[in-house]
Image (tube, rainbow, N blue to C red; front, side):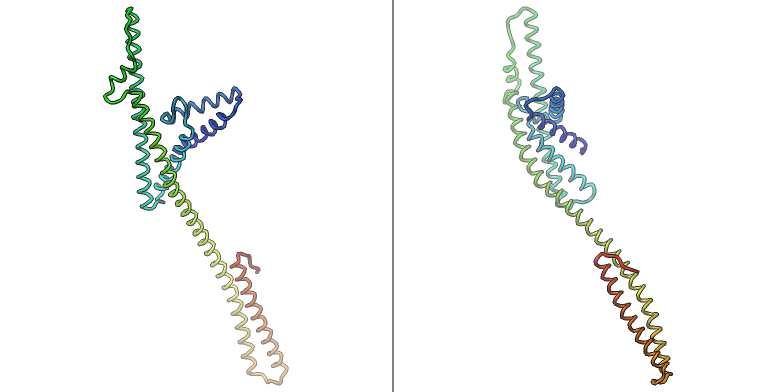
Length: 277
């Protein structure tokens, strides 16, 4: 889960920081020991010769993190059919490693049981004063039809190492691309939604400005039509006619000024600015 992945990443950070420090305080030694113990418990299949393969741990954490993100995207319905098929294929390959891990754990348990039995037999022989002794390695070999248990364990460990490198590399590549594509589509969708919202806002502002100036223009047109109608009944040589012509010109200038202001306000909205009232 996401929580376990986060915890593992924190443990790796502690392990890498402290394991590369030459002189550790008592608290640092304790922290390193705890991190190593926890990581070993989480990734027992990545311990070789009692030493944790931290690079392999990091690779597995990254693969698990990508699979977690991809499965979340799948649950949210964000994957294409092709991406979904790729995810199932890689998750299936990952389960192959888990099966190998279980087989390895079973071999280790079997080996420990054989050692325990041999020791108990040797102790019983010693208790009755006998001099015989059971050879643990021979006891293990005789109980295996093909290879001694130790050899089987080594074979299984090598198999896990090979498979894990290949599978985690494939997951990092293919699932990594899927996660990247999902994020890109999410960003594009957010950008489109933002653009649509801004476009709707702009359209609303443009409509308000157009309506406002349309009303003012209608009032000027009405006044101009009235003046021109009155001129028909006036003598061209009269003072009243000259006053009417002056009023007509003033109304025309107001129309031009109003139209220029309308254009300016519309331009401001399109550029993302604010208009004046």
